[in-house]
Structures are given as C-alpha cells and as structure tokens.
Image 1 (cartoon, rainbow, N blue to C red):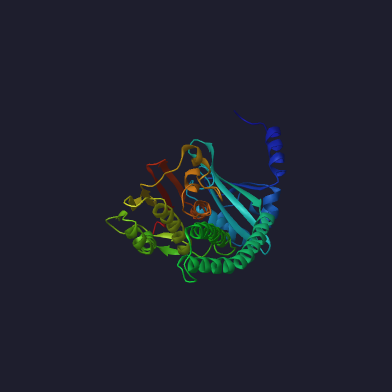
Image 2 (spheres, one colour):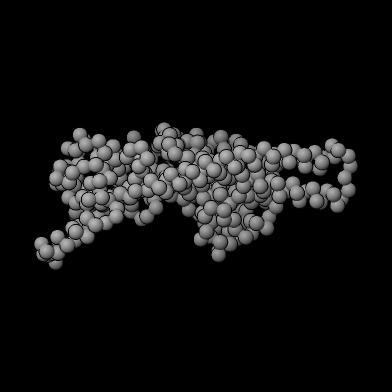
Length: 358
C-alpha cells in the first residue's frame, strides 16, 4: 500500500512531537529520519545529517562518540532488555546521560533498517547515584557494630566468658543467626551499590571465562569438601573465545551462583559446573541437587530482595540481592541469564556472553 504525501507529513509531525529522540538508519547506513529531540540531544542540525552516510559524519562529535559505537556493537539483536534489541547508556556531556535502544526495523523484503531511540535518563541516573551514596554511607556505619556483635556472640557461645546453660545457648544462637542475616543484607547492599556505581561499566578488558571461574571454584572447594558435595567442572577441549568484560563484575556473578548452589545443596549432594563455546557466545552453567525453586516463586527470582519461600525456611542467611545483581551485570554486558529448576530436585543456572569475534 502506497502512503500519500499528506499521510507521510502527518507521520513525520507525530514522530517530531515524540518526547524521545528517534533516528532511522537505512541499510545503506544513511540517516533517513531524525526528529527534533534527537537533534537537540545530539546537538546536530537535521539538514546537515539527513540522507548522509553516518561514516561521513565523524566531524560531528556526538555522532562519532555515541552513534558510531552503537552501530559497531549492534549485531541485529544481542540478548538484552527486549527481544532483538540492544540497550546501552552514553554520557553525552557532564550531567547529561542518554539511554540508547537499538532494534532492527523491517521496511521491506531484504531491507532492514536500524531504529535508534534516545531517552534522557539523567534524573533517574543521578537519583540512583544519590541513593547509592546514601546506601554506602549507611551500610558502612552498620557494618562495624554488626561485626563486633558477631564476635561478642561467638565468644559467648564458645564459653570464653564462662559456661552457659541450654536456654542461654538457644537464645544466643538465634541472636547470632539474626545478626548473620543482617550482615548478609549489608554485604548484599554494598554489592548492589557497587554494580550501579557510575563509571564502572567501562572498566572492561579481554578475558577468558575459564580464568574467571577457576578462582571461584578454589574459594568454595573447602566448603564443598566439608559438606561432602561431589563436584565436577567440565571445560571445553579448546580455550573458549575471549569476552570483553568487567572481570570483577563477572566474577561476582559466578560467585553468587556458586554461593547459592553450595549453600542450598545438602551434605552428600552434587554440583556440576561447565563452560560451553557456542557460535558467537560463550555459556556458563551450574547445576545443583539442592532444594530447588517452587513453581510460583520462579517469576520473581531475579527481583531485588526476593527469596523463595522454601529458602526462607532454611537456616541459611541471605539478602535476596545476589541473583538480581547477577542479572543486572549480565544484561549490562549484552548477555542473558536464565534457569531451570524443580522444587526438591535442584536448579541449573545459566548465563551467556557475546564473544569478541577476534
């Protein structure tokens, strides 16, 4: 169906009135549409960029700094916040942050353009910064007294101040457990604040996923031995392709997944971990024979402060932040994270990350 000039003009007026910036870059890499907000956000004149190849616009700093990297990274749909699209953030200038969403736009047979939506998230970003600063200050003030309380309770339980009776021991053990829960919450909040800390998302370098997994395994080896957990780690025959990653953050994800597997697997159970090389990505998985996740709890498992009902009933402390932090980190790296689980039969968690292609 052919659209009349009158309707084309109406559509352009609607696009121009959108609160978000919008660009359409055709198969020929020319900018075919740019609305007023995109002009303002990128500080360009549409007459200067319209119907021009993007690569010929390198003299425009925001096109070079913001649009060039997006076009290089976009592969037709990295796994992320929405199917077939890519999301990333860019600081255009001081105190001005944009969220960019890129997705394929099918205009006809063999004609796939790129739709780029620019959203001003400055207020949200800086509100988050203020929130994290408040959390960090508060949490650091709580950490010292909680640690001191832990030490005092441990000394009482160990009989350092004299023998205690059964009733006193029960009360002290409950208090110790509650204190451990608070410490776990405090540590989780610190990790969450660290994940959201501005300027950390670009601290990336080439890494081999196996090199990030090995130290985490070493860390949990003694605990698995203590619980008589049978552990198996499957490595690829060849070294997996390299990923571009913030190594400390990816280690944090692996540690969170291992921590849950070890914590919720009973003595004598099994844990299997592995790395699999796939086309364009590398995948990590960890399978346990633990308590599993109830069906009605699965939907909110990656939500902050969420803990499954059957987990709350155990003696294990937890903040409900580990999996939400893992999801944020993996999606920040244009990867995906998911799981399979059945209550009382165990869980398998997976994440995949795009390889560099080098």
